[in-house]
Length: 92
Image 1 (cartoon, helix red, strand yellow):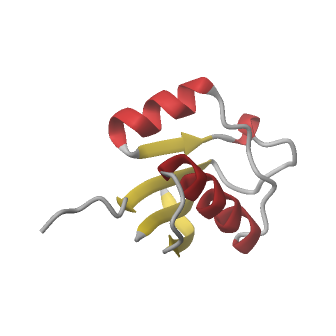
Image 2 (tube, rainbow, N blue to C red):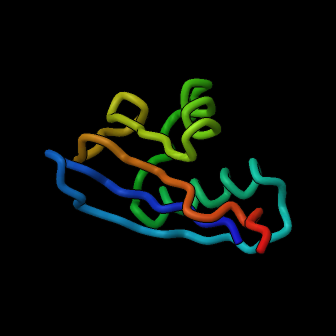
């Protein structure tokens, strides 16, 4: 299972939070993109620009932060944090 946790943060307070899962048999990048778009839809946000710096941050730390300048539309928060909770690759 692939699971991302998204948090909308304003003045250091979480003003919105959601966890989205994907159980489909897709590549990790496809799962990430699909879950990321679902998060934005559920939080009623435009999908922010995913730049190379976001790729590097996410691949290194399993965590990425988007700021208002990453969105095409205006947003009512200071940042959107996305964290990988489970990538489905855990071997017991």
